Image 1: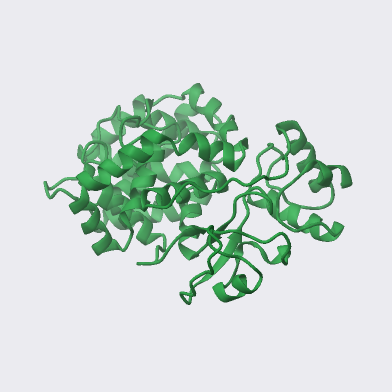
Image 2: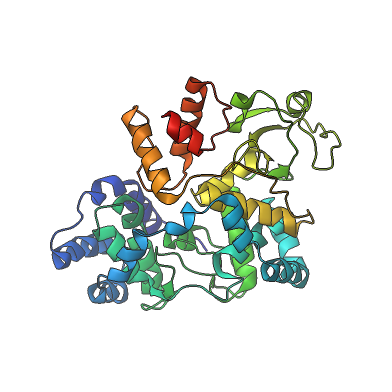
Length: 392
């Protein structure tokens, strides 16, 4: 489904001007909505969409969810162990078989393998069973009016109002607390601009049509940069000693180099040199599970910036593609929530940007940990331990 000018141009202009518009947050809610209404009207939204905006209200439950994402404080083994369930593996395999023609069509057109799409479908909504019960418009006006992250949510308002105005979505459409809609949780601008009519019925329904969901999800991944016919991650075995400072997702080296340092397949056989480059990801340090991450894994982090979620989704995709369960090995004990916050505070005091002192081991905190491990002469694997906390 695509829009044509001038409405398309107006919507794009709205999206690109989001940082300026995002400054207009907080304050009187009704006056703020009038500003959004003027923006929507200028983009071509009619009376139906404007009436929906007029009735929209702040949802305190959305703000509470936005500030309490404690699930991402779990370790990778904890989170993936809970999310990669027997039900999802069984149902994922069944759906790949049931909709084999649709998945094959999506891969042929967009280059994204079926298990990759199926894994997101599983994690986001359990294959459409749990799509969220928050009123989407209320969720987005709440988060756009709030001054914590308005630049993320304000650009979604006009696209959602356009979908409502055109009758593609009802005014009371429900979804996730952060404004995502449908079986793989698309934001309104993706739904509006880049969705695909997979079943050929002349409309796009990402809440009820599996072909629409599969084709649209594959297209979204392609647009984010997915490379056709290439892997995303591969479990490996690492030696007891190697240049740990060369590890990390962004340190992509030739597979021959990893082989020279003793990295092998899980069964101990040598890596197959495909000519690709990969980083060595150690989500729980050098003694925990290990994966080679290729360029396509970076697309997972475009989908969701949580490293733990992204790696879990990638591992689930490998399982649906036929790989066995990964070996958790024996990682060193990590830090509890309060210890992690203390670590982040100490890292900040040393001049590192950890993003936020929230007890979550995010990308910034991992990078700061690596720098301190290097400074202290420890193995540089990005995994914070009690020993590191004591040395700081």
